[in-house]
Length: 139
Image 1 (spheres, rainbow, N blue to C red):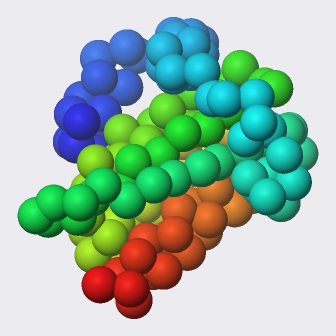
Image 2 (image 1 turned 180 degrees about the vertical axis):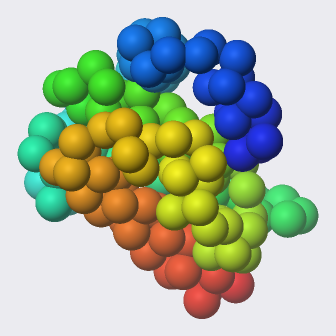
C-alpha cells in the first residue's frame, strides 16, 4: 500500500475514533511473530510499549526487505502494520529514500497520537532504516 492509499483510507474514515479502530484492526492482521524473536536482540529501545522487530532480505532481482513485528499494545501493533505497509517488500534503497516522517504527518498521526507513541514509532523507523542501510552496504 502506498502513502497515498493509506491517506485516502484515513480521510475516508473521518474521525479519529474510527481511525484508531482501523489501526487496531491493521495490527490484528499482522502475522504472528515467532516467540523466539521476542527477545532483547529484536526489542526496539525507545518505546514505552514492548516492541519487537525482525527483518530479512530476499534475493531478487531486486533484493527486497521483509519485516515481522509485534507489540503488547494494540495501537502500537497498528503503527507497526502501517510502517510495514510503507516499507516491507521494498528495496533497501527505496526504504532509505522514503520520508516516513512526511507519511506519518500525511496520515495525521503526528498530531493524533501521544508523544511517547510518536517517539516509539520513530525508534521503529530508525531500526528499519538501520536494517536497510546494512543491506544496502552489503550489496
